[in-house]
Length: 335
Ligand SMILES: NC(=O)c1ccc[n+]([C@@H]2O[C@H](COP(=O)([O-])OP(=O)(O)OC[C@H]3O[C@@H](n4cnc5c(N)ncnc54)[C@H](OP(=O)(O)O)[C@@H]3O)[C@@H](O)[C@H]2O)c1
Image 1 (cartoon, protein in one colour):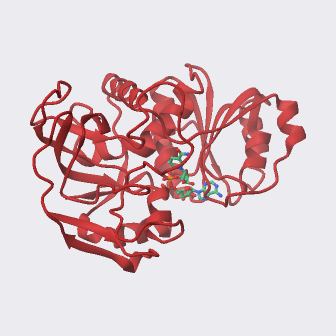
Image 2 (cartoon, protein in one colour; image 1 turned 180 degrees about the vertical axis):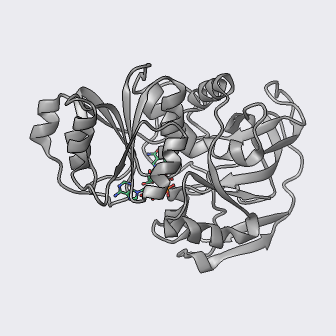
Image 3 (cartoon, rainbow, N blue to C red; image 1 turned 90 degrees about the vertical axis):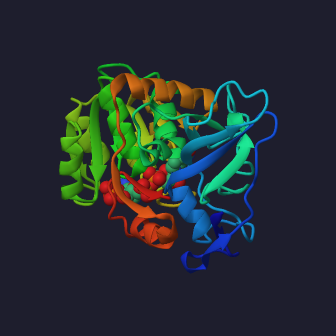
């Protein structure tokens, strides 16, 4: 079978297509999945580009979707022919987060899904939403579940709330779609007026260009009659957090998700205290939360926005497209 491997220390020119032995038939409790798609996340980019430490020969990509080809003894949740999607934390099944690192995350601490076939424990996957393509399903493992957990699981999002999404990447467009599906008002920012118009077409209620309006936190307050946003999906990190704290409502929630602008910086602590806002770091979610999200996706007929889909062998080009920042929503690999 074909797979992609990263040659340490990483770098987009060091991604290699290799032939590996077929993994064979699944044992008890395991499934054999023929993979057909993956999707790119900023985290995968950091791994393949050598910006975070990676083992030599690691198979990249946290997201994987495909078809069950065979099931081992004792597997009752899946049968051959089922369409399935992988879990970001294969060992976090339910309950509060037991992990604070990527040691057991496919495509980082363990081999990921840039390969034709995988044999693994059945609980490393869930059923994919009915009617989804494999590429659509692959977008759920990381980006979809992160937005869902931020807004619904931790945020307790309800109709009438105001959600602020930063930028138009994978997580933020999912946040926009989930928030609209649940009856929220959405404010979204972008560096591009053209992307903002695309966000409007998806239902965004208010648009802010964060380049031409650097004090966008104040603009969010204006747009909400001084109230601020109830939920902020904070993908920027230190470069955007001070504005997010300006933008948040009293008692609102900021889900600290991303590191797009760096990994450390100053926080206006007095304003955060005055706002009495909750600032919560989070990484993706559990298998149980993924199952709940998929039920909601089927009920609301939500489909992810795929900006571009490339073949597995074009993985370096796919990451260069992500690096360019031209994308809106998700970039996928299909194989
Ligand atoms: N904690 C978690 O569980 C988790 C899960 C998934 C992702 N993340 C993190 O979340 C971040 C986004 O991930 P992603 O996969 O959605 O990335 P992505 O698809 O590559 O999104 C990148 C987009 O972010 C926007 N952006 C960049 N700098 C910005 C800034 N200063 N202010 C506002 N928007 C900015 C840009 O949107 P415009 O082009 O519209 O300006 C850019 O296109 C990354 O840091 C990633 O590591 C964390």
